[in-house]
Length: 125
Image 1 (cartoon, rainbow, N blue to C red):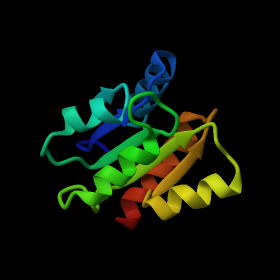
Image 2 (cartoon, helix red, strand yellow):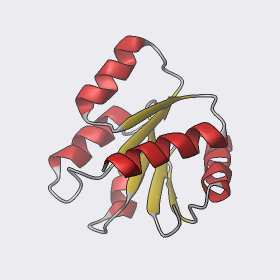
Image 3 (tube, helix red, strand yellow):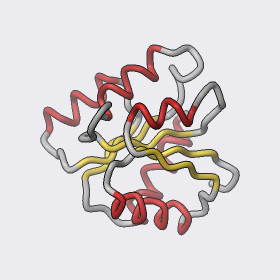
Image 4 (cartoon, rainbow, N blue to C red):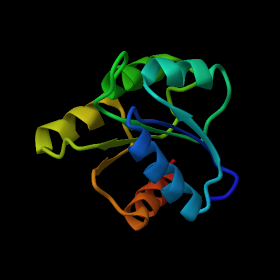
């Protein structure tokens, strides 16, 4: 997983630290943090990204709005998106998949779960 360029979007500073540590533990070191969807779009610009990891519930622009925005842009329409959320109901999972996310993790999670899900997404893309 080394050499992968990842941006993750999470409004909680504590969760951002946990996710950053988890990504570093599994060998992903080219990581950009964003606080919400608007911040992510600003930081992503037109650059190429290997994956977007996003929370669902955030102020200003939530994960659902971010996914829809990314999927509407030609340069991000195929970028793998992993959603991390406290929302674990089957309806929420189905909604996320219909939006176009490639994977879904429910908080709390371990670095091993994150690594497995990211590996699945990269091997499928």
